Figure (cartoon, rainbow, N blue to C red):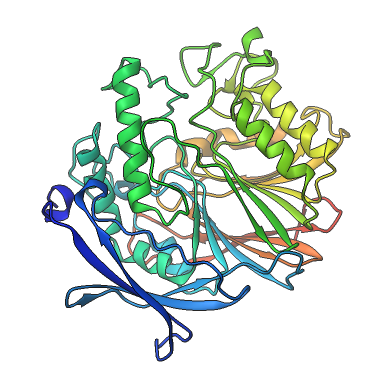
Length: 448
């Protein structure tokens, strides 16, 4: 790999076509986009006024070269109740820790959309299983190289071709466990100014390489939270739990005790503006299922009795902020809340309760934490029994298998199928269904 893909500074014209059939025999629309080096010659074609709930196909041209034909699908019309929606749910694809067999499997399914919960790239890629020999990025050229190393992989390309993607980021798109404008301990960009310059570069590289309907960023501050409605079946709110969160004040490490500061009303994960936006969106929705696509675990993980051991990078480190969100779900009478999460390289199913230690507490939603595509999560396996034993609203967990989650949504139920790769460190390893869970309309999550 070479910087900027080996392309020079000259503008490049990219042609595109939208077809009515998978063979592109009937071209519905076409056009050209002139790209330049300032944004890595990336092209974002934003078509409007297409027919709702319809499948289309598309491809791009550059000179004599053309891409493979890809499939996309529009959302149902506002006010329509779709009979069925199939969603892929995925996160955490550290290229050096395994093969992307999960994407190969995903590409075989007929999906309406793929929801990516973050950690699309990793800033560090040691050669655990396979090698991506690149230095840790701190500037735009460095992040572009990492995206180039990830994007060239055939399974990822195939998964992008099967359905439209709805993406958000987590921490590794910039730097592990950064908090707002505060870098991690030992960062290569340790002061605020250098870190914000790095964050601006990382955000721009993300925009260049992601299929998003967002204007290009112009600096380190860039709102990406947004809403997508699939008719009246699913109201999806895509959240950003990294850019606006308060820096942890309770412990110098990710695992530690909670302190008084964590309960301060101003201690936040989403930031006041995003919280207000989400509250308004919840209040205005009449969808059958209310869905939050976000990054870090919202359920409570109690490792030990008492208040001395929490994962402070999760919502457990921000209990007042979590309670505000759960109160908003209850106060707005949001229908059938479902939270889709990534980050922890393991699978979890549980209820979101107003008191996580009380088995009889009011439940306001369900969380499905999807495992990683390839990032290793085995270190969590030994602590799962203790967490489940001390967390009455958690139903199930596993940390040894990688994969993705297939969600089938109808007006009557939400069905979550956890698809697991037998061994992600072996290329072409078998994929099967590990477990399936149901959320009936108006009911609690149960094992299928």
